[in-house]
Structures are given as structure tokens and as C-alpha cells.
Length: 173
Image 1 (cartoon, one colour):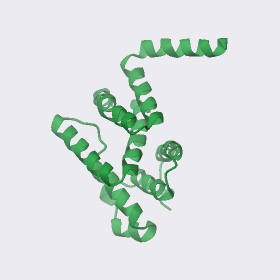
Image 2 (image 1 turned 30 degrees about the horizontal axis):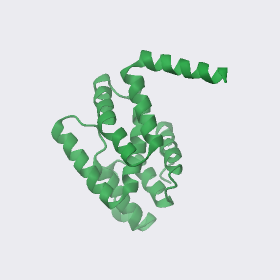
Image 3 (image 1 turned 45 degrees about the vertical axis):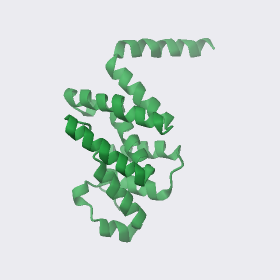
């Protein structure tokens, strides 16, 4: 029933994140919490209803997802607070962090949805925080997608050249 009113963009986002999470073999509760996280603004969530409909684990995970603050840093104090919250959540349930990282992969691959200044700040956060964190957690698919998107944004000409070289090498094989 929650998907009925979702926009096509929101549905694509959920599917995109699901595809990433599937490769890490995360459980159904993680998938449900992810969908609710994407579908409902945190101000509209009644955790008692979520708990009744989906269970305590989904409710707790959804609360954790909403408390981390996945927005990219606008100031050093905000960035510090986001990292602190992320580490607290990670110590409680690493699945929450994997969902947030997958969500950020979607955002970094769809930068055109942001204003230019917002793109620059977000790329900086991805490059300095999220990609290295993904690497430390051995989430290589996520790390690679983040690094590729950052490279494409920061040096589009070199990215195009390397992409062309790679295609030519594949054709030669």
C-alpha cells in the first residue's frame, strides 16, 4: 500500500538500492526498512504503526536510518555530527550503514538532480567519507560506483578518455 502513491523516480530509487543490497544478501527486514525510508519523510513516520505492521526490527532500523542524517555536509560541525551519528548507528546495526551508502550511490550517480554547489559539496563528502568507509567495510561494488562517479564529475575529460580506451581494449579482445 505504501508504493501506491510513490512517484516513478521514487520507485526507481527503491529498485536501484534493492539491486545493490541484494548483492550483499541482506534480509527482508532490511529491504522493508529501506523502502519505508525512501517512501516516507521522517516527520510522517509513526514508529508504533511501523512496529505493528512490520515488527520491532524494521521499526528500529527505520528509526536508525532517519537519525543518521545522510545529507551531505554543509559545515564542519554538521559533517562531524553526521559522522558521529553514522558511527553510533554502525555499532548498533551495520545494515543501516549499508542502506545509507547504497542510497548515496544513487545520489552520486544522479547528480543532475542537484544544484551545482550542492553537487560539489556532495562529491567532496563521497570522496572523503563515504567511498573510503565503503572500502573499509569491503563494500567494493559501492566503493567502485562512488569513485567512478566522483572521477566522472571531477575530471570529465579524462573519464571520457579512459572510458573510450577501455571500450577499445574490449573490442580488441
